[in-house]
Length: 77
Image 1 (cartoon, helix red, strand yellow):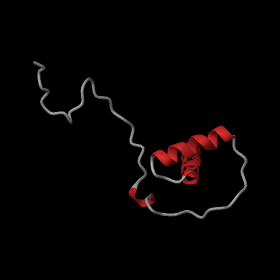
Image 2 (cartoon, one colour):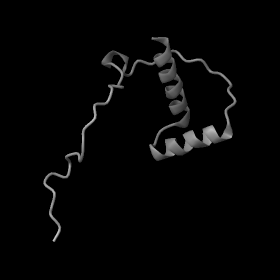
Image 3 (cartoon, one colour):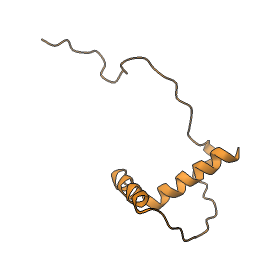
């Protein structure tokens, strides 16, 4: 007979601290001004974002915009 584990929600193994990546409260829901552009992307990149967007019930263009915003935030501070 298998030994039943105690609490199934508890992690197994060594715990590792993760850097806080969430935006501060004052940046939540604060839309920035946007600029509409035409941008040519590789077909494989667009396919990737469309697949991920479908998987997470999101919009692929918003995911791309968020990625670019995070990149800019990372390298301007």
